[in-house]
Length: 553
Image (cartoon, rainbow, N blue to C red; front, side, top):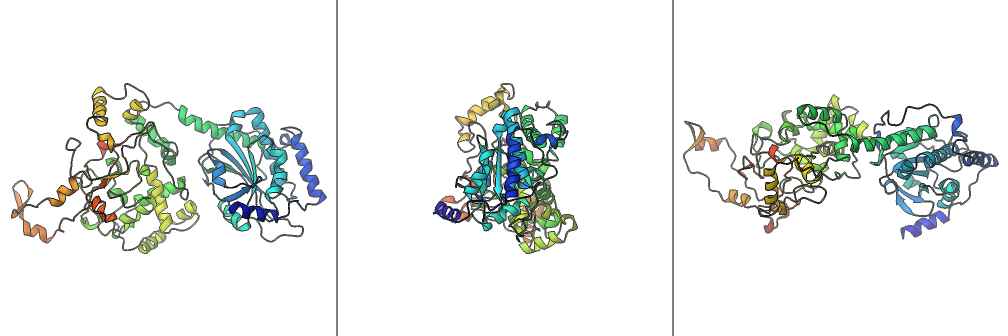
């Protein structure tokens, strides 16, 4: 149905360009110059550039997505075409008569493509050129096929259009491409030339205008991105010790996204939602929100006060942390290390996305105590420290969605792998793990059957099956009869009458685990399986923090 509609729409368009002889001559002249050789046009404009790999191309923003129609009539999306490639995306229209506009840009990209084929075949195999028309009413798939035929022969170069102006609009907005809707005499469109360099992670790394688009520069930049990726894998592992750890921390302080996009040994690629790709601006904003006590009702609590960074992003001192005004919580604060991989959040698994999870502690009366979503939004919008930050990160002001996305982006970067176990099991380093630990692993996976729930895979280990189980601890706690003693021991030799304690205390809350979410009796006292990564750092243990040490577990 969809393809039939597109085919009919495309068939109704004009399949030939209504260009003047001047325009045809201009395109033909540039095309002939390009076909004459890779350097026919480029030599006149090529400048001297720094050596590839001697400079950096910091991520600018995520590359947008949208539905397009290729010159063969295939309906697809930009992100599907990106598919792990280095992408050069140009936005043009075929009837452009600007001598330094669309025809010029397409010819220069053709030169760059030929140079890659000739001088950099390995990089050429990793790159894809995409030319997208912003004139769908005239540039049908057939027009784009004829326009791109001389350039695309034997190359990974896709020429495409869109089904309608409505389908085009979000793409133009995402890439900041301005096209004047009012057409001048002759059908010209007012626009600025923009060509985008996009990396394998769908991040825009450079934007070229008419004055800076040069085949030599583009080839250099593509080479730089390839060298950047290779350097991550070739970099030697630093020596052990605090100095080395500090060095690693300092190197990655400015780019927290790297750990998620390029995971360490023992962990897979972190899942990132398509509608919330990681950027440095989002991560920095999310980190700021994570540590900000002003998000709580009385300006005393932040996320980091229960999830303490130097305590494994949990709270080692309390079985269950305290919220605003010392209000009791009934469950242990789970570690946030590798939370990006968790399919279910909270001990009862009631949330499935970090973007929505963050609002529960913000609004819980015994945690951060915010009275409403609107109250949080109004407070953040009034704070001078956040002025312009949401606009920079998301292109729009703070709202319920962007606050959740910012904090979630920061939490996704809390990746921890490449442990001695990973180096021993996945890195095949027989010296990385001592013999006692190796014997423990055999017991863990065999007789003790710990691995049945705390699972590991062939090339990575999350040490969780992402399921909920009843270990008996929740049931035991619910059935426990509290002491009938008249006094409560506070310290050695110091007892307080029980009725005095009860007068200022809440009764211990009941906890039925996953049942509270599903209302299925089978789920009573079931709690999700936590990951065992960094488990030595994240005491106390179990959903209620009832075990103080690993020996207790």
